[in-house]
Image 1 (cartoon, one colour):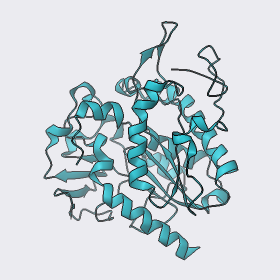
Image 2: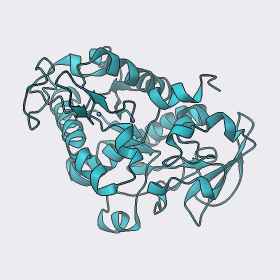
Image 3: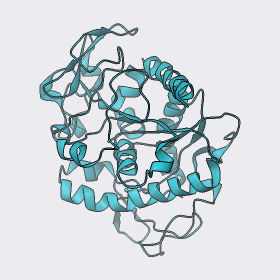
Length: 323
């Protein structure tokens, strides 16, 4: 288990999952209009400049969670979106991207775009209308990056979508808006960890097909973890998509983890209940409104690291057998 302080995790890993530095390319300055787009042909707009991305026959497209806060730009304006050109803000996001790469991408070429994610302060308002309005710019970047990846980097390979928190919201929206039938045939699975899917979304978008076991493909893998029902985030109370990543079941069968705790799925609230863990280690008072005590959101990649790593292999093998 990672022993870094919870405060550091909230700034590096959280990840609900902030500068309208709207730029026509990654080299534009902050005076550019907010409707400009990012030029994802510039490798600097991608984590590690998309290095070593052509060795394997499966890709993984990952969207990082919320890692930045509101800040004041050089003009004295409060910004709510990440400046992807700012070295300090990139340094806040990179540990979360690296963690996901270490867990999910052993068997995949890894692609992760920097994007104008909305700030943690935005999520802490709990104002869904404001969050959705600010998220439009973030999603524009993710969609642009995904289209660039599909046109220039994918080269016909099967691929996995993945995201945590705000990144999970982004890949869910990619499924709803960008995944055509041709693209869906190459999609192994979507790991949308730490977000929510409502009953209305599930009914309206057949592409949101929840995973039922460890090897189904073309499915949506999603879950949220708490120590008690009261710790569910107020933004996630309508969620209906959940699978237990320890035993890959959608019923209430308890599953002992290799890390010593036990995970059960509460089928009434569609959330994982984790017992045998010290919730005080994960409580961050500054974000209590969003993540109450007992909410394990910021640690979900660490809690299920080996379970997720193994499952990526399982779904890739299942996809190859069926194709």
